[in-house]
Length: 271
Image 1 (tube, rainbow, N blue to C red):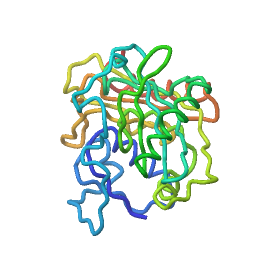
Image 2 (image 1 turned 60 degrees about the vertical axis):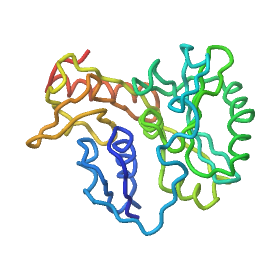
Image 3 (image 1 turned 135 degrees about the horizontal axis):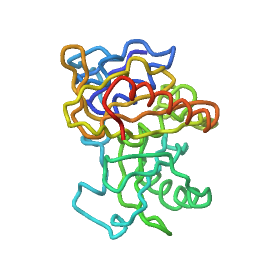
Image 4 (image 1 turned 45 degrees about the horizontal axis):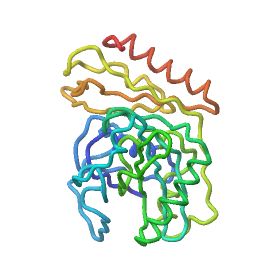
């Protein structure tokens, strides 16, 4: 199956990287040139015969709509991404977010009792009430009793970078099952994953070295960069997210450390 990605950010880089793992993926196309996606996808201006969009900018309620809850000021911010096919809910791993949107992300060590409570009390009733179908990310804030602050349609950038490397198996199969109402009976298998956010100490505009030497099994997602004369240059002080994957967390940590060592040997100093 050929795939068209619309957008230019680390989210699209993470999606392209995950789709590229699959033997069922044909050609990946992108409508927007982007340094991270360019090595995985061909440029295409975009043609659509049938289009279905749940919301034009990917957000349903919260954050950018002007309303604000006191819980948004809490230190703990987490996201519960999930798939919903109109009948069956398939939760994805929870994600802990940085204090500001778009700053950092990591898989969340959320107690199972808290997770199940949020899913049954908040997530599933909302989805059933909306007759929704697709990928949704429910944002919560709060230290002891997390409160709902936002609902996004589709993967957010932080969720894509934290969750997709953890998933073992075919992302496309899950998305197709979600779209056709066949999630019932499916389960998730996950890898051991360690994600490291790398801020370069050099100024914005510094060249990024060593990325071509990182193994495919170690994901790297470019937060903001541009390609000039076949070289990548940082456009943001936090340009890279490195994801080590293995059968267990210790091996995943070693994979991430090995990738960081490659970057340290070939480019600017990394803090």
